[in-house]
Structure formats: C-alpha cells, structure tokens
Length: 236
Image 1 (cartoon, helix red, strand yellow):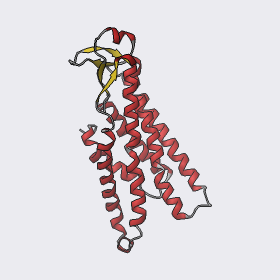
Image 2: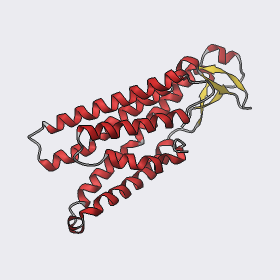
Image 3: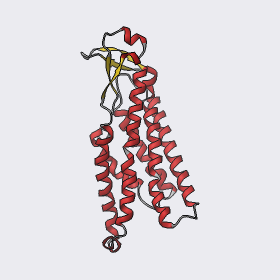
Image 4: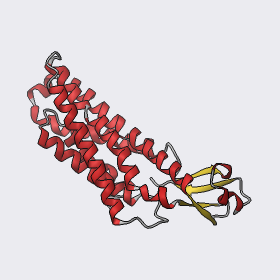
C-alpha cells in the first residue's frame, strides 16, 4: 500500500516536510535524502512494467545509485552555500530550502533508470489493437523509461519550489512571529497541498498505456503485425 501511486502523497508528505526543513545539518540532509530515495525506489519498482522479471541485483543497483547521487549532490550544494559568505543570511536560508529540488530531480532520473534498467536489456511487451502481444521491444522500453523519468522531474518541481517561497512570506506574518510552534504544522499543510496538486499533474503528462508507431520499432516487430501503431505499458 505505501508504494502504490495512490499512496504516494500520504506516505511521501512527511518525507517532503523533512527535506524542506530549514537549517539542515549534514547528518539530517543525508537521512532525509536516503529516506526519500528509499521510498522512491520502492514506488518505481512497484509501478514498473512488470512483463519481465526484475532480478534483486537490479533493484539494489538502482537503490544504491539513486541514494548516492542524491546525498552527494545535496551535501555538496549545502557546503557550497554555507561558504557563500557574500550572501545575506535570509538569502542563504531561501537557497538552502531550494537545494532539495535539483538533488531530488537528478536522483529521481537515476532512480528510474537504474530501477528499470532490466527493461532496456530485456525489452517490454507491445500490443496490437486487439490487445495481443506482438513482441518484446527495447526501443519501446527506452521510450517508457524516458517518459517516466520526465514525470519524476516535473513531480518535485512545485513541491520543492513553492513551499519555500510561500513559507518565506508566511514566516514574516505577525501571527506566526508570535506563534512559532505553528510553523511546522502550516509548513506540513503547504507541502501536502502542493504534493496533492503536482502528483496528478505529473503522471498525467503521458498515458500509462502509451502508443508508438511500428515504423519506429525493431524490424521483427513490424514483420509480426499489420498494425501501424502498437501500445505499451510505460508504468507510472
């Protein structure tokens, strides 16, 4: 249940809140990036095109690759910002809050590619207009993974960009200046709202059952069907 696309928002929002907390230490940055990519790896695995079996080694390769890239980039950017003494403290805080987006976006691409690398080598099933399997296509697998990776870049964009900007203004309100304990609950609600809006937007960019012209696929696929267009499950 936690790894279904319908469970992405309720189970992912606490992680998003953790990623966007200000004044992160190196240890807390590593922890939240690790937790986020662990969740993403399981979501990508659970929502992949499962027509071909995926070895455990491929799952572990994607997991460690994504976590390593995210943590390395996030920690590196944090160190860079901390050394930027010319910036005002307020500007440094805003930039530090925006750091999770490039870290998560790059790691998401790596995560999808490595978690579903087996599809590139084995191919995925393509179907004709009657739903019959025509064959297995590596080219269709490449399209499926590229489309899914693009959605994983779009998905965190509003989540990691809007809440820091919104919170930078809300924190200046007199009410929140005198009630600092409400900052975290309000921050959580803002993250929940943006996450709820961005998820359907991102996964609707491409249909789950995508179509591709037979002329773009392998010759053996074209020889096996009279259809000009075939369908493949790109996953979510």
